[in-house]
Amino acid sequence: MPQPRSAGPRQGPRQGPRQGQRQGQRRPKAPRDPVRRTAFDVLQAVDDRDAYANLLLPSLLRERGLSGRDAALATELTYGTLRGRGTYDAVLGMCSDRPVAKIDLPLLNVLRLGTHQLLGTRIPPHAAVGTAVDLARSVSGPGQAKFANAVLRKVAARDLDAWLGIIAPKDETGRLSVVHSHPRWIVNALRDAAGAGEVEALLAADNERPRVTLVARPGRSTVAELGGEPAAYSPYAAYLAEGDPGAVLAVREGRAAVQDEASQLVALALTRVEAGGPDARWLDLCAGPGGKAALLSGLAGERGAHLLACDLQPHRARLVRGTIDPRAGVAVADGTRPAWAPGSFDRVLADVPCSGLGALRRRPEARWRRGPETIAELGPLQRRLLASALDAVRPGGVVAYVTCSPHLAETRVVVDDVLRGRDDIERLNAPSYLEGVPGLGEGPYAQFWPHRHGTDAMFLALLRRS
Ligand SMILES: C[S@@+](CC[C@H](N)C(=O)[O-])C[C@H]1O[C@@H](n2cnc3c(N)ncnc32)[C@H](O)[C@@H]1O
Image 1 (cartoon, rainbow, N blue to C red):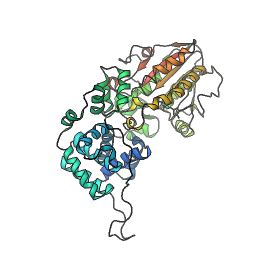
Image 2: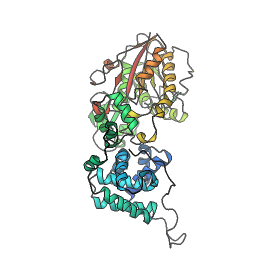
Image 3: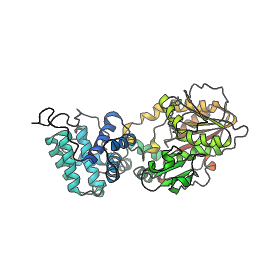
Image 4: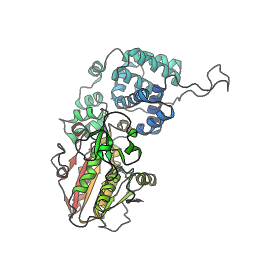
């Protein structure tokens, strides 16, 4: 399968005056096709400077005055191209006389965008090819526009299913990788976690557009205020059918927010365990940007408990301050070097930094960004943070270890490793604190899945210190 490519010499959008145009004679023209140009600019920024599509795209749409159908099309083209990149590169490899790895990055992104329109949308082929050729001309010059035209005409000769019949490798991992556009190492990791029988459904679900789920922050808004359909599992959630979450008043006022349902549920599960003693001091060890802390702080407030939300990064801690209940505390702190005495807390959430393989629906580019080395790099920090969370809780208190990844090396292997070294921790049966949610596994850990629950693939271990 063609891998995310290394960039050759970069050619940016043409700057400065056109040929034959004198300096200062005319203002630069707005792009002819601002929708595709915007999608292209996001694709480039993702590759060139590790931009996050979910942050950059909304700001470019605003800056360029794109709204309604134009914004929807730019969003579909950006996300669809990022999701399908692995499949599209394999198709392009069959249609180009240059290896895909040798095509300049801007031109390759134009070709990916064109291929997505041809194979992944109902845009008429002449429009898909024509607009891509125009874009190729403006970013790479007329010679490359001819090349783009030749390649995309070949792509247009077949539909996606016909191409998949040709490009899919014979081996099962290779087939899943190309058909569902995931790197091989992720296919293998997800098969280990979900099982061979479900991995294909999981990979397919990663390529679905996730529904927008809102959370009504406890004590600050209600599900009825959110307007959408009440969610299946979280009593604080609603699914938004269509439209902009910013149009919901409670969201605009920070009393509600967009939050995946599994993210809500793992935080809720922590609050549902019997604390077996005082229940006044709660800690969120890795709180930024504050989604779970906002929910926990509201619940803590309702029960007369106090939440301390920490993050190592000052800017992440600032984001937390902006979201949580004002009665909660926020601190910049290294969770591996606690500033509190051991046993200071009754409940601790350790939502540790992870690969994010559980959120590929919402961050499709993440699959192309890093390799398997990420998992090994994060392992020591995840272990130190979990050990620190266990030390921070008093005997009888409870810790939730959470990742937004189902990768076994980030989930059960971390918990099992840390617990192997100590005899004061009991594993609780996490699924039993998530009553009404089927398919979380047989315990003691709970694993959410996009293909089963329509949520991110969040992992939860609930651990009591004895
Ligand atoms: C997965 S995110 C947490 C998401 C958060 N719980 C939420 O729901 O919005 C992990 C966070 O851990 C923070 N972090 C990384 N190393 C840390 C450390 N040593 N101590 C505390 N926080 C740390 C990161 O800055 C990041 O904000």
